[in-house]
Image (cartoon, rainbow, N blue to C red):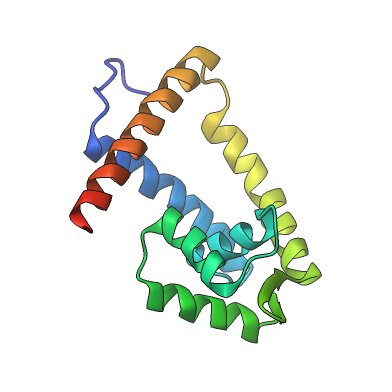
Length: 147
């Protein structure tokens, strides 16, 4: 940690994101899965209700802001690998997908503990408030650009 805390800005946010994502992608590669596939599986597994492919695609888009065609290609890959299945109009994660995410979680837990450990709760709370506000504002700006 540096002796003088830098002010949070878009560059610092991006650097933190890519550093953390790099760690995650290292673990994901050992499991033969991509970042986008992992996000898609997590969205399918954490959905409160069964999702249609279109609904799941929209959830993934909300997270990644990725092109719909790319998302559909990822869903097709996960279906081909039998990590997702179609049951009528709904798409479901398989037990294999759940086991995969559990294994990834177990592999990332020690790294996550080293990265986040020791950060005071009040600092995490302040960072959480700032990041939530930045996310809200950026999503609003993106929505305005899309209209």
